[in-house]
Amino acid sequence: MRMRKKKNLVPRMERCGAFLIRDPYDRQGHWRDLMPQARELRLELGCGKGRFTAGTAAAEPDVLFIAVERVPDAMVVAMERCVNAGLTNVFFVDANADQLPYFFAPGEVDRIYINFCDPWPGNRHAKRRLTHGNFLKLYRQVLKSGGQIHFKTDNQPLFEFSVEEIPQFGFTLSEVTRDLHANGPVGVMTDYEAKFYGLGQPINRCVATMEDGWVEPFPVDPERAADRWLDVFAAGVSEKDLGEHILAEGNYLWHLFSWELAPHLSGDEARAALSARKDEEWYLFYNEYPPEGVNRTRPVTPEEVAALPTDRGAIPGSDWYIVDRNFTWTYAQAHEEECGPYFCEAPKA
Image 1 (cartoon, helix red, strand yellow):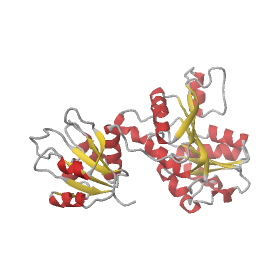
Image 2 (image 1 turned 30 degrees about the horizontal axis):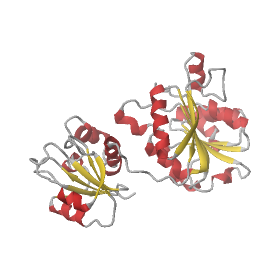
Image 3 (image 1 turned 90 degrees about the vertical axis):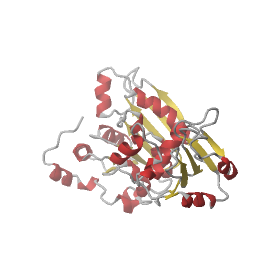
Image 4 (image 1 turned 90 degrees about the horizontal axis):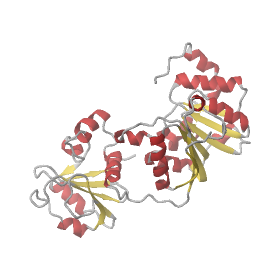
């Protein structure tokens, strides 16, 4: 539900200006300067109207809290709550969660709170969930060794997705519950949480502790491989083009190139670019209609790839993709003889 616009938003924000961080990119590695005596630095992603923010900051005055919120009409209420409570250990940032590694230095954050985030139902939008692997990898970049994520939601499908997703990205789960307040209220509630609790709706919660030395494995599930492929090679493609030309029924991943949506090589140039790749781990995955009796995702050698038939009669209806372990480049073989093959390098960050 869209939040109603607040009256006098600008002057209200200005009155709380001491709480708003306007230069988060310049503070990387220096957030503790805001509160040198702080024993911990914690983030809250999506603080909403700030009931949890103000309550938690008041309960732990020796902790520095940074609340991230993209909706000014919600943020101003949260800021006013903190001002009225006389708090000096909480500050606000207007930003998206995908910017965290640009704001915070590696290991600078002790804990991240994710409370009642948008569940983004439907597989197509799964990568927008704040507990999706793409975000978990970002959190790993800013959390300290042994740092934690504290996650709460009323949405059961989102919670089930999260408790399956989170351990795959180097976190150990604990305190997993699907009815946090079964025996009475526990901890500081958000505004949503208090409402749901009053309605008798169970609240899910878990804690995820970051493990050291985690290395992202190559996705063994072809759907995950395809998702990561799109995340990397279609990073600059608009939602409209992505939906219309790649994700809609009857389309294929390699349409990214046939529709000229990303820079690439094709034909003999693509083959030559693939041949030039040496001393790397290669992986193959089929996205649609793989041949019977083969693994849809598997490591391969250049010699095995060279031996793969590419004519339509040999492998009817199948497309296959080669990537290196870190998805820095890809080679796409289309089932249509007049299309491709294609070679593409990942866009530079």
